[in-house]
Length: 152
Image (cartoon, rainbow, N blue to C red; front, side, top):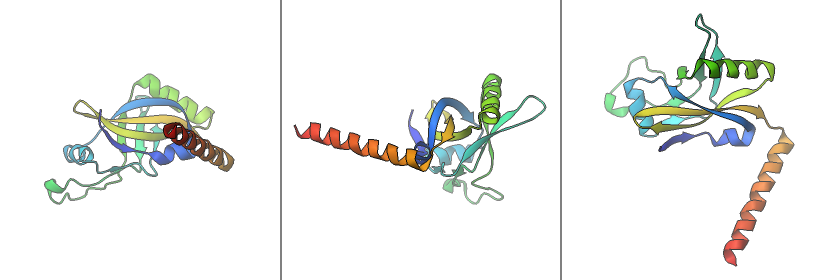
């Protein structure tokens, strides 16, 4: 399961509550570009869009650069909205949590599973400034403890 991209900012800005996995709907050139690592999740978020069949999950703002070997791709937008394939029960759960508890759905990472490109995303609650400072302090303290144990 090689990881293609990680959203490190999500761990800093949000408290992740519940993680999910979904497949990404991509074109052939986008799959090749993603497997080469031309994926950026900075500023991306997911949204549940209502439709006749109950709803679908859309990722906004994920950047997949153009595949160089395909030549010039006319009309290609690297940050276009892409559909995420998840179960109907999961869509309903995400919609309910998103609306009722005012949670955000953020992408955590993009990776491959076999020949498929998968997206790991999470229901998240935004952190306050003091929570961010506390997490930085805890991380620094943990790093110091590991260094001192390594020296002994």
